[in-house]
Image (cartoon, rainbow, N blue to C red):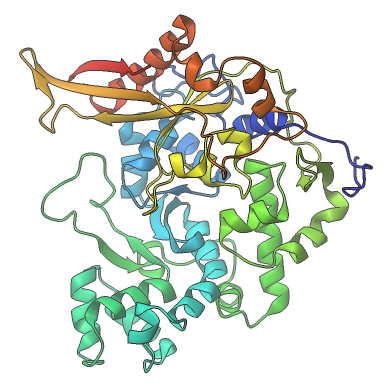
Length: 446
């Protein structure tokens, strides 16, 4: 097993190698067989709509779901033969749920993670409610334990955010209902119940409606309620550390090799060095392109930097782009601000040879896009040129960034006929899933 520090004893890895490792861990690097019919098997043998979708969400430690449609595209890009019903049915049978977890962001997760990830995030969320911000100021005189207890009682049955805030305000009339409802979301594992989150759902009943994870799921299956309560309260350091160790191990399986800073940025948790130190004896240690100490599971795949990879259409808000502090393994010379807007919107991206080449967006046949032959669903692909501004990533000694300098940039490669054809094929496959009743059009702007 390879171990060592950043003093030259640990083997170096390149940006291209890190990018390919990420694609294979994210189940995005298999060009053949990923577009098979519903029920077809992954190369690892996983099959069956329910099992494969739940297993994928578990492996990825959740998918961001503040935009309800995002996980559908995220799963389509990874699961062969994915159909929107595969996820919709899992929300209805409660084998997957949408709940605010890491970073206080709504994620699609398994029931076990609905409890454990929210417990890990709870101390930071409670601290936010006591910080100098609009919610903290509004809740300054509210006992947060009392607020959590009152909200838990009210949410034994699903309530909209507006109704929850209104009912809490009956007890705290001097506090704005919006702040009270937001505080409850930070303090409790609250599930957004269907039909919110179902593909194409709109109209009455789709307003964000909450209930507690306990009411919706019945309780954690693999951890005791007392243990998770201790993690949430930060009252048992050993339980907290054990939960963080489990999280870091899973993070490396899906996102490694990675640094401590990478794990902290992805999770929103501070001081993960202690968890990494617990794991260190069983980990591989590498030196990144910038001299950063990286960690990995010893048997995890780490392909060569020149291994062929397919064109990837990654979903908006995909953790493929957001899962690291140093994102150059995916972005190359594309600046973060070209993909993540100032208000936190994250574009859907196109990857060519493992690096972001552009963005893609689609419009469905039911939103006014039409021609004389009827409804049209359209994908638009737009290149992202390498950013030459001062905060663009600079070249390291080796890796994908340097390969782009030596030849055509990923954005320029979108104009190559073979690459363009692969982009169009992937986009058309998405439209068959997202808008099967519409005519399909793909426009690549180069």
